[in-house]
Image (cartoon, rainbow, N blue to C red):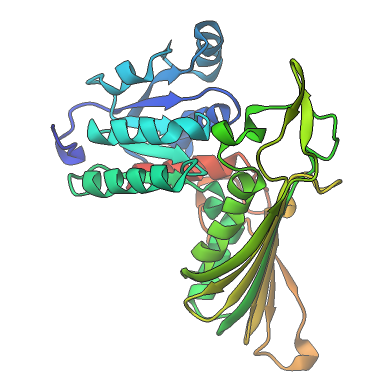
Length: 346
């Protein structure tokens, strides 16, 4: 096995994305744009991989990939492929990632990491072993790359909140509120692993850990499925994952976090809200207003205290110097471009 050495490279990095639906489209857009806005190592968009030959070929042409393929194993074995970006459903993550890392390919894998603890542990072990050979890997938590949340982490690291005492994190959607919404692979435990817990609570929990640089020492929680059957192609089918999840997390620092996630919160389209309370200040964030950060400085005289709305569009803000003149907002898709930028810089 040859360890990849960027300093000795004579050609651009070859990239393959596995999966061409929702996440495959988001990642393809990021790979297409990252080099136009950020200084990154040279790479080529080689191949888009999917199970349906006709559909993946159409997607590859539409998204700007040089070619398409249906066999991910053969793609991993190619000498011109250096990066495997896994956007396939969760039940495929472990097998693909472990094989790619063993083959010396750098790996970016979408969240949730895996469908079972055993799969996740195997992936981590493979990543640790590969890292020792200079092979990099990363989980796709794109909300870490929202400029407002990256700024929030900077403020916390600078001590602007003082000692963080408690955090409220809620990720709420409503795409399953209608009991007649049809069955999909995301509602089956054997394919999705979990429901709202893995799909969106993973983002909320990651933000708690990322923003505070902390770890969980104790957890209590519960899951619930409100709609237990959904219309399937052959009649009603049992839902085997959760519609909603709640948890209380105790962190190593002593802070307490409450986390809530739901895919049946009627009227909430894609709302990730964060409230971070310290003894010297507070931060508020809502993904549906992702260019804004609420900040209260409790160290100023009480007669002057109040939440400030920071419009995170200045060149001094994280990632923003690559984009438009100040005051011009960016969107959800830009977080994936930032993610590819960070991955390539690794």
